[in-house]
Length: 147
Image (tube, rainbow, N blue to C red; front, top):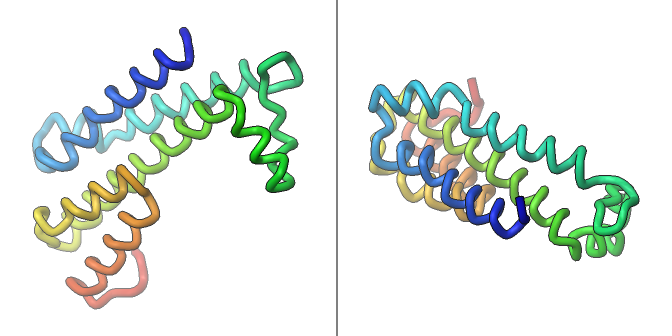
């Protein structure tokens, strides 16, 4: 599969669990297919396959030893295959954070409509959404410590 095709597929496929989190957080289907962590697992497996089959010294491959310097990292991410691996990483982990936010908010009794901006930013810019949720959670529960 070409990287451009994989990129388009991944971007569309990840919208399924995000739409469930945003619009159907208490739906039985969301509990079955999203809260089971199957979607993050799927993206993690794609990541693993890309990591194994693309990494190495071959032409167009990814040399992960370049993580040790900023210059090396810049060269690494000049390759489409490395960018795709990084993108799958973001999709998997941002989705994990989004799932956790919804489940935690439900446990803490935080109204879902308050969570929607946090989820949007978790999807688009993970750390910003997570920070927003942390602040929302503190304001609503007065708890700094995660349980």
